[in-house]
Image (cartoon, rainbow, N blue to C red; front, side):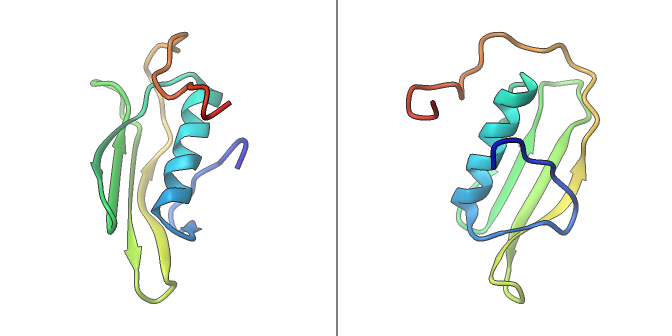
Amino acid sequence: MKSPVFKVGMVFADVVELRKALTAYSIRNRVQIKKVKNDKIRLEAVCTPGCPWLLKASYDNRTGGFVIKAYNSEHVCQKKWKLKDLTAKFL
């Protein structure tokens, strides 16, 4: 996923694929995304304090994958030039 567009109900094969999509989103939009809860069955990501952007996803037995349960796409924060996720491994 080079430029992911998230939506509620979107299904990912596993948590690793969702993490990669979040990293690509972070770099593409120049925002620092922090993963608050990040384990095998759930993932909660937020932007900087004061920014309403939010993504919550968890494992779903029916689909057998990770499903986005809650998502707010609005950013009110400043764009960043130095991103922690932009690493040699990502490039």
